[in-house]
Length: 176
Image 1 (tube, rainbow, N blue to C red):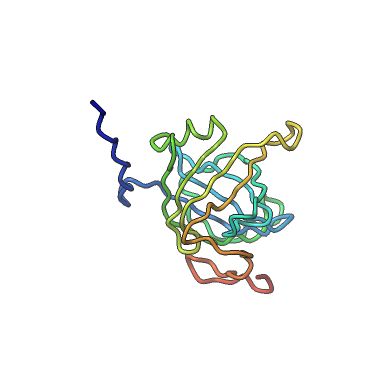
Image 2 (image 1 turned 120 degrees about the vertical axis):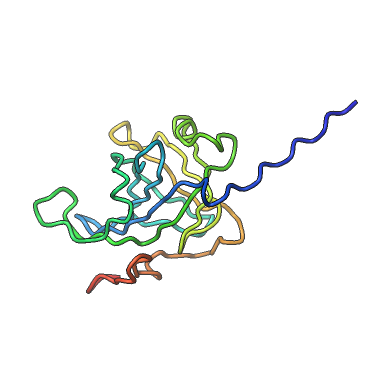
């Protein structure tokens, strides 16, 4: 006798999803900060070239300190002399859910070094993966962020083609 097939888990409802933000930050160097709500904090990576919707492109994502949840929709200019001084906009925001083997525990997936997730944002949608690497020689924790092939993939995508804040519509003066 064969056992019945295990049904595929249904997608989570919006009420079951966590939040994410991608902030565009003009500090010493322009970069994008990917932040995922995990375990009561915003687990964060600095992505120097920004996320790419092109599945052929892997982006360096440097794991940085967690941020408090109240930083989720932070958009303003940090004054000179303060840590991270420079302008910050909310480039994208929305909800995300973990997919794959650790679908119920993002912290376990991070510890294991591979987090697969689906984004439901204003600009970024669909399936993504972030993978821990051994690059950097232990000085910093480097990961690779990559879009997975799905209906939201876009070849040759450059995040600079969408410069405005997804929150306020603001485009920082003299910058794209």
